[in-house]
Image (tube, rainbow, N blue to C red; front, side, top):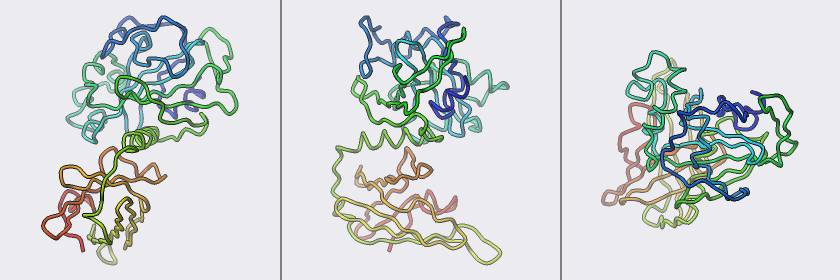
Length: 309
């Protein structure tokens, strides 16, 4: 059973039991009421937020970057999970067990608290979250029998991802189930950003050109480690290259720029999931004829505005 769960949702459904029994009464309270479907459900028409699918309860998976989720499985609907992805790093970090002001801050039993469906639901404000459903339809599932309704995906099974947007479910991606990345939150964040930014048109003319900045990071036995950031900005594209000393070169390549409140928010737009973040990687602002950037370097400089060349 654990094998299929890990394959299907990359370790995010550790509490999904693939069962069609043992439903708990406590989990029958939805965050926002959704009307129960009465007709036969087809893929793409399922209301994944329907109260009837929350019977197994909300939980926090034991992941490096945890988030609220719940799972459902039956032979009619298939298997899916519904993940609540915070719209900012601050909201996402609330669910991290190391956050001294977060969800786990007052518990002496983190494992039990991670399964406390009622407590989890009361701390979720839907407007602060992107809600993503990942669905493996029945036609891609082999049910292997047993009283627990055990199952495994068929060869070349595909999982479809949906975003709850404008009060409906919008398909935002599809991938072979066996190829779902282990870093699910980054993968889903990448899908979310490509969906919400695809119609965004930002004129980057005010920031056009080649701009660079260098910062020192930490002392080493052979000198001060440093990173030089080199941005190339055109009317519609942003690219980043790095030069480093005693630092790892990470997250180079293509970026996406969104202008908000007279500042340019810059998001990673490449294929390296470890570089994806819900907040912008960098922010550039213009003060008179000078450009300043925030988000470079380490702890000493990351939250400071640094003059660019």
